[in-house]
Length: 421
Image (cartoon, rainbow, N blue to C red; front, side):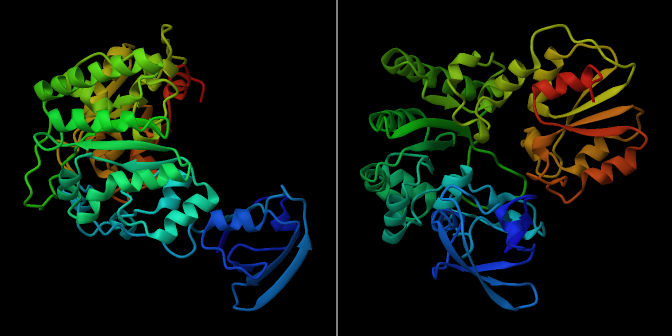
């Protein structure tokens, strides 16, 4: 279903409308926007359209080979998102609050979303047909959740015997010429220590198909009911992980000039250790996974002295972990860094991206300010709504006349503080 028509596009010229459905392209039914892109690459096109009123119409036309349709769709996949059949011991979806919006309960394991948007997949839900399609369209790179290269341990963590097939599945991707980025959700006393060393060593052997390895700490909310014991990292154990991984990072940089293995920012914040320099993150291959986001923010903010552009009282909302970094970076009169305790998911969840509107509202009550800055990562992508369905407009109404602005990066943060908004 078409959700948007670009102005001046081929779709507009063909008089397609929002709400129209594309049923077939040259007699073939597209499964997703990948199919659609390949089918629309022809010069002669015949579309079977179903309009919002149910009427069907065939539209035939000629176009340039590289001319795009210029339409956006309700979903990137037209035959439904592939759901994850695993029951991973650390699954965050199983730890969210009850009665939240349905989309938050969707556990996807869809290789198409991995290729299009960088979603991580386990490979356990792929069929032989899926592998053939990945090869046919050369869907590369993909993003693969590894967690452990020990087959038995991986099967235990994913709670499926299919988890033990990781080596043969990676072999299959490599035969198809597919590159991939990898991730480990690290759980204390489960897949760390010697198991982590083994996983890193095995992934390094798979270069150059393996492009990077991100290691992030497991997160646990107060809503977790799983009886499988999960241990979280503390300051001492986070320091130990950093020291262990640093040895591998130094080895990788010495051998092929890239760090390759990257730790989630939370490890450094937990251990209260300095973040690695910007060059250590290479080209930030997993920044969408939160890897290096703090260092990138610091670099974008810049090192010059900050001077307020206007005489304003500014409250800056942050998760409790990042607030410590911000307080060191911003020592400016009238700018207050407010660490917000995550009471919605539990105080152990301390990242800014999981803050809810309700917790932000409670943290701001009882004070006066001219401007409120909130982390854009706390909002649903492309929308102005928090995880608890509180909207940005709700905050603006409650705290008017103060302005409420979402901040996307360090450069934008600096501009706002300097009055350029």
